[in-house]
Length: 299
Image (cartoon, rainbow, N blue to C red; front, side):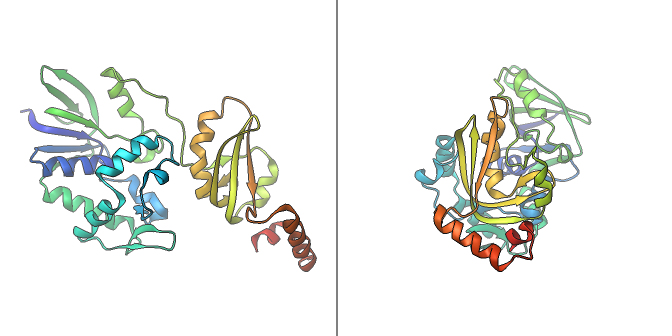
């Protein structure tokens, strides 16, 4: 027998889970479907397993406007802010802490505690959860949606597609949602990588692997025109560069990668002018003449 709901949510990540929680709190009969064996699988990987939930910077228009699609974010944060999120978890028994960079983590520094809290809230709100089920089709019949999985058929007044992008297939993000949305006539903007490391073609980069630079300024250029700038940490890897500053620039770089030559310029000491920096480098080299350049930068 087909199961009937007010809202069926496809995708059990944070977005889908919160959609299920708030829908059920408004008196709706809700089900949540995820192809994985647990909800929020990708969330377990965030913050190196510690789960950086949000930050406590003031979410005013000036701050938000620094980000792409800032106008959209302004409306979103007016409805549910970082303060709301902090209170939401604390009120549901998850103790949080704020580090010196105003980043918010669970007190335990364990992402599993965040997932367990979300699952507890879903259960307390009587959300019906179907795990290890893949949605194979959605169709509209009159005022209802028919959602077919590989195990059952559900009927619902509303459907929320919260399947994520295509960034991490191992966690279930394979782009299913784009297919479903496109079949219903939605225009799909081609996804590009973001919040990722950048591959560098120069061979010297391999010799710098493991070097972590703090308080540097990173600029990205397309055909010698600046397309983005970030201040923060940069980590040199075996393939190129990563770290928070690079992750924040990666979306801009991805969107322009096929439009011309992309260059990344790193200002190691943005607070110093050229003359002072030159004197300091000469002093460091003189005092550490027995060190390689790699080890000199490490220190």
